Length: 105
Image 1 (cartoon, helix red, strand yellow):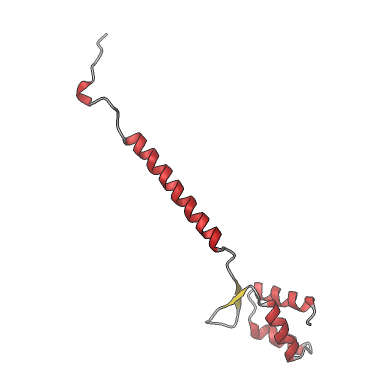
Image 2 (cartoon, one colour):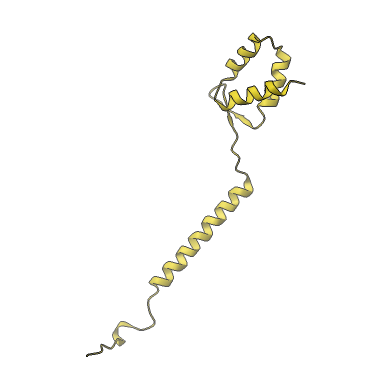
């Protein structure tokens, strides 16, 4: 088992955008064995996704399917309310324009 301090160090470095190679070289220079480094990286990189174009990692988006669906429902509900308001105000009156009587003083 790798110490929590090393795992927290790796997480902090990943969040700050450090590359995997720079973290590995620092840990090897500190005397850590390859097996401990691999175990620490496996544990620390949970919740991060690998960027294919580089050796750095970035946090995985926290938006789940439920949250995404809820936001879509909110937007649709808002659009329906706006459409109903527009129809109400632009719907016209019940009295045709030809039937309007002008009152003279």
